[in-house]
Amino acid sequence: MRRSLPTALVVVVGLLLLLDFVVINPTLAGASDALLELIVLLAAAAAVAGGIALVVHHARNVIQRGDDVPGSLVLLGGLGVMLAAGLYPGSEGAGDPTVRWLVAALLAPLVAALFAMLFVFLLRATGRGLQLRPRQTAVMLAAATLVVIFLLPIGGSLGSWLAAAAGWTQDVAIAGVFRGLLIGVAVLTAVQAARILLAVDGADD
Amino acid sequence: MDLGRLVGDLLSFVGGLVGDSSLRLGPLPTLALLAVLLVLLSLVARPSTRWMVRDLGHLAAVGRAMALAAEAGGEAAFSLGTAGVARAVTASERLQTLAALPILGHVARAAARAGVPLRVTANDVVAVHLAEGTLGEAHRLTETEERRLRSRAEFTGEGRAVPAAAALGELAAPAAAFADGGVGEESLLMLDGVATGAAWTSFGTATVSQVASVLLSGEGTLVGPELYQAPSDLRAAGHARVGVLAANRLLFAAVAVIVVGSLATLVGGVDLAAALAGR
Image (cartoon, rainbow over all chains, first blue to last red; front, side, top):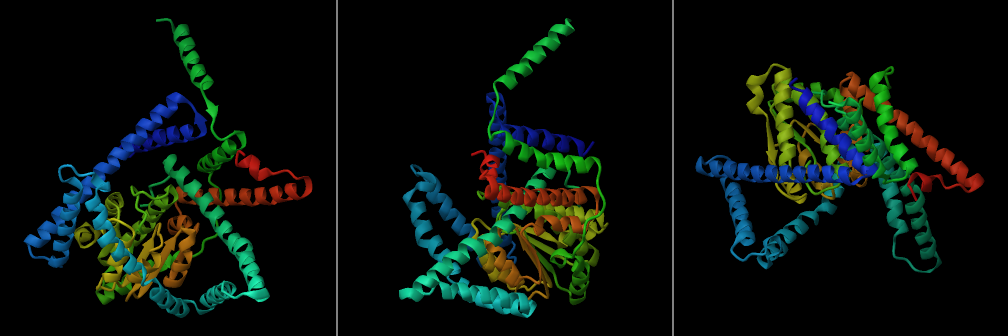
């Protein structure tokens, strides 16, 4: 009984949404729209509850002088500044110029700086890959080197041949591998979704 | 009470509903979609024999990794990726977070038995809540509830770059590191951060564009569909086996459609793909 009610709810809601996806019917569309709105509301409530829990956790950390107090202070300060910028009287919310300035002047450069390290970390990961499985990583590196050579900015007939080879590699070899993986992922995704939809799942743990 | 009239009204109501309806995708795509449910239901009713088992993602060795972690006095780390469950990403990415939960359950049970603290990170409050539930269930199943508070699920912040930065900035090197679920362009940074100093790693994603990061960084890897297949290898319970068998049948069907469609296009100029896609 403890499991049967949520299971029945999952099955009914899942089948209703699937039916609405397959069949065009105003009654079904109304019911599924109402359910989706409820899900959005639940997700919003979970996000607010998560935010409050985060503030409580870090405030307690600061008050009790726990681990990484400066980190907690930065988090609380950042959260406060962002909320103040988005919620002050007359604010336009997420589209407010102050919020946009904070995002453009602080967040975007921080993210860009983080992603600028990708090249260094790619080299490091390559070294790690060569240690873990030398043969497979060597094949990956050889393929990557080939693609880099194909994309070299060279003119003349050699450049045209390289560009054609790069196009063929992308459209045939790489696209083939991607499509194979995507078909496998799509089938397993459909099965996983059907398992959740029919509640043939969840007992793994 | 006129039962005949009640049945008549009910039938006319259902008839009216059906009359107001039309197929959104056309007959062939609708049949293809319902075939997934049909194959799964047929297997639920009558499960077949075993499938071939491989050690996907080196997950069979999790017990040994946890024993070594316990001996070294270290902790284990598990990242649920950066897609979450309630975040604004594609449905296929969010489903990967759900697919990673049985793997988290397997790791959590092994950690609970070995007495190793497990630290789970996710950047979505719903995913964190699900991880908390999975940790609690693992300790309940292994009758180690007195160790429950040593393991924890943590929220690592909004945006995809934040978990990557948090993983890179983490000073404590875990004895065993896991990362399974949907990842984005931050994958290499996050996986490298999670793996730094770890004696044992297992990473997996079904995000095709990020597969190379997993292959380069992880000792055990779950690539593409393997993320969904791995839970079935961990526990040979009926429902898990049904998932793999259904997927195998659908993959065979997909290959057959590709071969027949290609032959039909070559021989008679019939575009099967267009009919299946409802074009």
